[in-house]
Image (cartoon, rainbow, N blue to C red):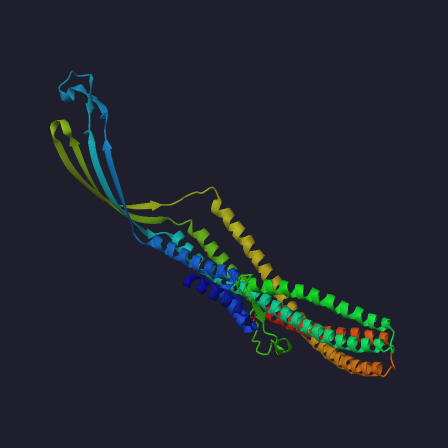
Length: 432
């Protein structure tokens, strides 16, 4: 009985859960922590940090233990002059060296004294760390660009739906009044049919916008790390009417910073190629303890051994491998210089185009605002004239269509202005 009550309570609770209402700031914060693309970019940063630690560990001493427990089923022999063991001169005798059981343990220490390749690897990984961090920043900028774009698209769609609902409500009131006139034989039924056609067109547009809204909401859920089945609701306020470039700082061109880091990595690679001509030096030491057993004579003997050494590795000729690697490095450097100039010009053009587009869309918005005011004024006049019988239903239907178009235009104008500002923020690297 208790369990059924708890289950019923949980079911009721699940139905009472309301959709989470999100504003733009909360969407950006969620994307920053939960978007899998951003998360993976930050994991790349952590992975490279571990690789640096791994490379740095190459400078530390290495200690290895080797154990060898061997049974000589047949003890190997060696030929010696027979006279050594009292045999006939000129002949040879087979002498076996060793015992059946040999238990050997060796501990060896290796320490890098000088290895230019290790030093190059660490410096290259540290520069690569900068590259990965810049790439992560660029990834975060791109994701946040999509979040802002999707958020405003969703707001615009919701605003259009509000306009349609309001227009349908007003049109239904008009149809009701018109039907009363039809019932009184004052207006022919065709006039009502014309208004019903307009209402059905609006209802069809409403369904299309609802489907579009659902698609945009699902995409936004993915961007901010929400489950697609989870309910969310975007806060519809005046944020789409507010500029998003009011606090824009100086240009933060991550693309150029990224190429600069790649150029430093190319220089480090060049140094690494030259370092490969240098020798490497390592110190090593080993201690060995071997215990020999001969069971048939009850013999057992332990033998100690230890040695120290220095090992020098130096490639005197590599078949021109490093020579051609340096050629490739030089070509890569030239490509990076060309890429830097090309990217700089492209970014400058994008920034100028984005600034011009912002001004164009501001003008377009002003025109759309004026058009909406005129459309609303004309709509009120047409309705009054229609009720007085001065204008026909055709004029009324056309005016309703013009009003909805003006309402749509104002929403699109706001959306295009925000998009232009967003493109400017992206071009200058100022998306927060």
